[in-house]
Length: 273
Image 1 (cartoon, rainbow, N blue to C red):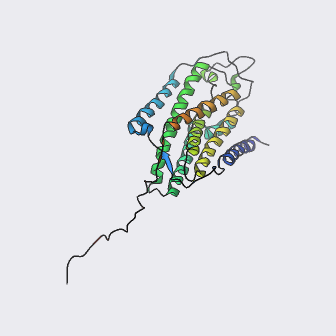
Image 2 (cartoon, rainbow, N blue to C red):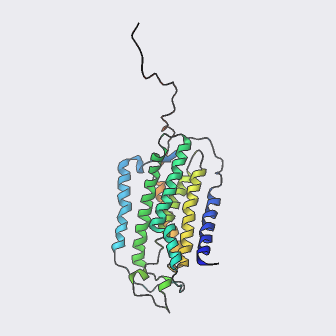
Image 3 (cartoon, rainbow, N blue to C red):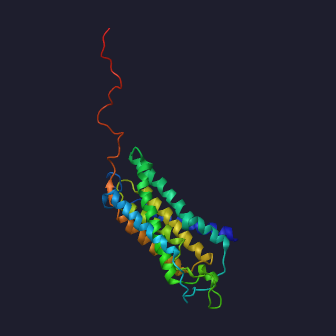
């Protein structure tokens, strides 16, 4: 089996498996009103502060890179094709694609619930996604700068390469942000009321992208298995914590189309012939 076909099989299996597991009907679904995430501390000001705090660690990418003696688990030749594919499942591009899918699915959840502006309400969840990606990526940068682990593709005869980028393997910066999105969507799904199937599907997409990214990064020679596992743990934990910082609230009142009385006529005639 050639490289492109094997890569397609890896991605298909990862996404299909996660979707199959996460899209199962939730236990004891009820007819409760739909819900959605509120601002942090139920206040817009709290959300602004949280966004700033989440963005601040991104500056760690500017710190000098440590070069430690922590070698790769084994030498693995670089595979540019797998590396290119991983750019579309993880990191910035993959995260953007996953967030877009999550935004559409979340909007559909609100649309089926009868909200008048479902995709506007879905932006609330997208804000949490962005915060989770920013914080998880920033923490990943900081750990990379301190750990200084060698990448498998640069590990030759017990020695690492000469570039700083050869020493920033731990944790996986491609896996971490999409894992953070999976963490957010997982919390959203398990705390949902009403029909939760769509939210479980959104979690499945994010977790599938995470698994595909982890496999592809190892196959590309960019990471050891410990690197992608650490990225998964760091990202998932960050996403879960941020999601829980946003309390779930009843959004059933956001249905202005529902009215108990018929609409009054727009024009009336008070004159006489």
